[in-house]
Image 1 (spheres, each protein chain N blue to C red):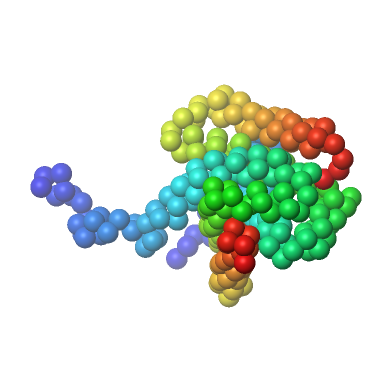
Image 2 (image 1 turned 90 degrees about the horizontal axis):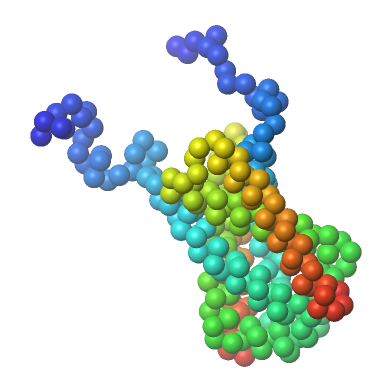
Length: 131
Length: 131
């Protein structure tokens, strides 16, 4: 029979917050957000195929204040998942496993993803008018 | 012979390569391959959407109808849904501990992903073929 007095691993609130934990949790969270965002891609393609009226309606929706907030959120989720996913692929190949490298690449994922969001939205806004 | 003398596993077990989980590394490997593809396809998608940010309906439709764009969009949609299902599957397996809810969710995301992928592909084909 199982010995019920055996030690359990401590739950998440026991640990001190570290950037490696945050990047790992964010990878999952952004992945789930992006899975929902796939529906936006399909909606856009369907409206483009359906005709000008449907496409204009799609543009009004994503150009509304709520739509813009969601788009900014999704763009960061995409860039974060892209940066951190690339980091995980490199780690799967055996690179960057020393703890200082692990911490440094965690910060790199967060910072580069934020920079990419700024660059992309600067491009959108400087090209004139709102999306 | 001498190297295998202490191996208690049947050689057939090793040859099949399915391990104790009975499904091998297929899920893990497919997730990485689709991730690698999505680095390229995702960056291409972002550039394409950015170039069309302020485009009108006719311009956007003509861009999607270009053979290379249509091909890459179809690849992007299929790979995106495939990768999303593999990721969501792991999340559901990790956090949903009631067996029937877990199975219902696992089947539901597969249904939704196939529906979304086919809808997206059909939309691109309608635009590309002008029907």
